Image (cartoon, rainbow, N blue to C red):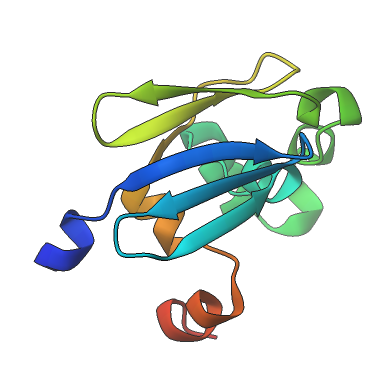
Length: 117
């Protein structure tokens, strides 16, 4: 990672409409994440393994959380490097490092410049 990437950190974060997390970064960029997208990108070991499986072999019930799971998640800081999201269904083992959140930013500019394909 470059020094610039290592220095990225949020300066503000807030929920918009209860289903979208807005993060404003120290470089002036803003990332808006819908809760279903954040859940699909959960970085915990179990979710990463499930995403790597053939789609026919995935635990689809767990990979597609219910509305209850996505409703009113809470966020807590983890050290100075990330956040943990506590989902409505009790899933909370994923720690989202700030570098990962920036990597998965769904805005059109980030999608074009940071992820191949």
